Image (tube, rainbow, N blue to C red; front, top):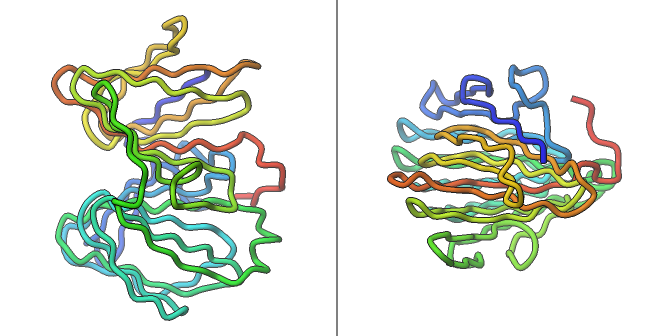
Length: 259
């Protein structure tokens, strides 16, 4: 199991609406400075927070699948399909951009915190489909609690969000001192952002590869064996730990956009 940890200063930055919405970009757009160019079909990942009520004006998208996941606050979505929707804590907005769509985003409360994540399907096929917009509230997502760990599945499996891109997304919360084990299959990659607290990760079987995890760290883990490997996450005894995690294949089986 190969683990790379990137601190906040190794990631990209972005800002909108006169710096009223500031982003930390774990994976940036092409030609922007960041330590990680992409993780398989995971193309772009920004985590932002509003310092004031703010808005990103109408702009176009095509072919990519774009998920906005709200950590807290209120995000408004408007698009050329006629959608005008808002979503709050724990909810998600999904644009499958297909042949093309315009949209705008507004952050309607001070301190709104959200992620925008771009997934790359087979672009030459995706661009032939009509664009769609769907929205999901927190209560629609499956949540499992066990031994101090809360696992919310956001994309894939029994989650309501199903993308053309092969991807699974989780929101993991660990109480102080709790542990959680996640199994990673061969030829898969796991990427995650530490959005609250601190802790550590290591290979669950042999305890090797111990890595400290701190707030704002971006972590990329790749299976390096032919069998499934288990990752052990441990929360700090006082702070606990919250992680947003995405698993994707190393090779999705189609050509990826050349960044």
